[in-house]
Amino acid sequence: MKVLILINSLGAGGAERSMVEYAKFLLKAPEIEFKIVCLKHKEVGLEKEVAVAGISTIYHRGNSFKSKLSFFNRLIEKEQPDLVHSVLTESNLIARASKISGKKFTLIQSLVNTPYSIERKKDNQLSWFKFQIMKQIDIVSARLTKQIYYHSITHEVLEHYKSLYNIKDNYKVIYRGRESNEYCNEVKKKDRFTIINSGRQEFAKGQIDILKALHYLEKNYGVTEIDFEILGRSGTYSKILENYIEEHNLSSRVKIHGFVNNVYKTLASCHAFVFPSYYEGLGGALIEAFASKLPCVCSSIPVLKEVVGSPDGALFSEPGNIESLANNIYKLYENEDYRNKLSNYAYIRFENSFKLKEINQEMLNMYKSLEINNQ
Image (cartoon, rainbow, N blue to C red; front, side):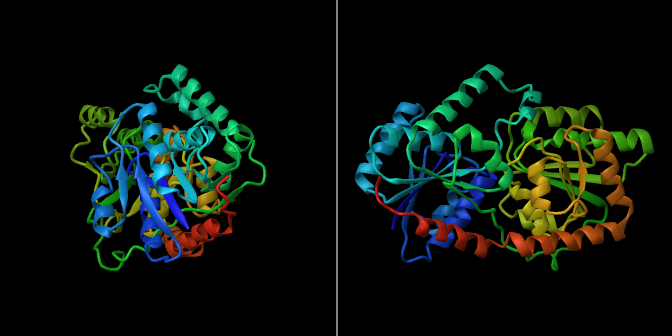
């Protein structure tokens, strides 16, 4: 089977990480011949890792939608793939436009987020008018494209799209997977109680709320013994985070690492993971925290409740509720026994549902189960 994996870029996001890990797995599958196709280069991310792994990758260098579509159509004619697997919105739009224009291939599209959540209205960096236009383009193009098979990374994401795309029985839900964290028994925990968040510095990830929670604990309870580390590439909220840290004298307790190659080593050195996202598709960072045996505080959005798997498996706060978030952080800070209880649950949940090898095999089985008929 000849496959093209079409993705916006090999940046530092969870979807990109998951597809790179899957591509490494496919290298060992003799029945699959594949290439990764990227619509653009990304300075920060996984390009070097992919090159070192020996994964065949093709990059487009133009910026316009027209140039990207022409590039992809030429590639379809040259490669003659049996199957195209597209990931992330722009790639999905390009693949649909290619099929609508008459190119023939079986199409799988991964649904990896809940982008039309009402919570996005709270993002003051977002142009709501442009957002609504893009939403309609997405919906119409999906409905006009014949015979798309959808891979959804959670049941909540599937429900988010079902009515929008008119999805019937043409889907499969397969979670993302991660490797176990081998550093858990090797790396010493930091001397001071340290919480950590991993994700790009954008509104959706809620890192500003963690900073506000730390300030709340200091102002209301005099607690200054909690440190905070942020992993993830810079984004539209980077300056907002930096300004808040400076204005509230948090620089001695907060460290922003940016993108790092070895997330697991840093996770293993911390005491708890805090993930107050406003919307997620699954939250690969939360799975990495579970794999690292970290007790977790996360927002009470349906997707994260699905990932956690039990109301007692983590501490939950409503998105944007600073007082609740602060109190949950403090609960983990002051109660080591409770941290250990959540830590044990987290790792069992990871072992049962998110092991990378099993997830990748499910993805490969999905490929094989589709009728490859160049429709």
